[in-house]
Image (cartoon, rainbow, N blue to C red; front, side):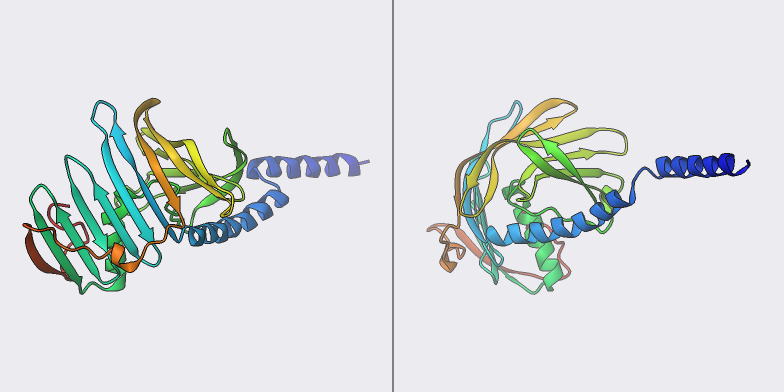
Length: 273
């Protein structure tokens, strides 16, 4: 007669523990296998974007739009140009870094003595402003989590969440990507103090041959208010970009200088960048 209450209590205890853990074995197994799939898919998508040329404008609310162009070809060939009022060009041709400042009529060629890791950091920081979300691959930390989600532009999506470290410690960043193509759809950030920001895809440019889409218009939001946008007026995926497209020559009448990037230099754009 004591068997039934004892068994019932055990079952209730098991149910309570399951509720507290908040997941079933099946769900945990799916999450464990989904993250490697996402990482592999992002690498495959990055390989498809081996060369491209884009042009457009970046505008913050209340300010005039700034035009820009950006050319990319793997591996590590990059060229970015800003229009007025900055009017400058940066380029890396695989061995030399070029900086052309039109307002100052200054042209500088940098040779590099940076070790590979520092060089990669320097190039990333220099060209990051030219590369919209959707053209760069999210850097996933070891503690990133992933779950399935939905989005107005994608019935099937995945949501990647991670908390940053270092100087941005505590900042939570969440990407929403279309599944299984892993096209960028949005990126939300939440600061430790609660401040939130988001960048959302509003229009896309899709390539059937590559089986992917890239943003054509991105809106930026802070605290629920729209604060800016990036609009691409030209998107050329798979563009034929020869080596000399990244090797600049000084325009006539410019002050020409030669410098060297050395390990003791800060891994930030040179003065005037």
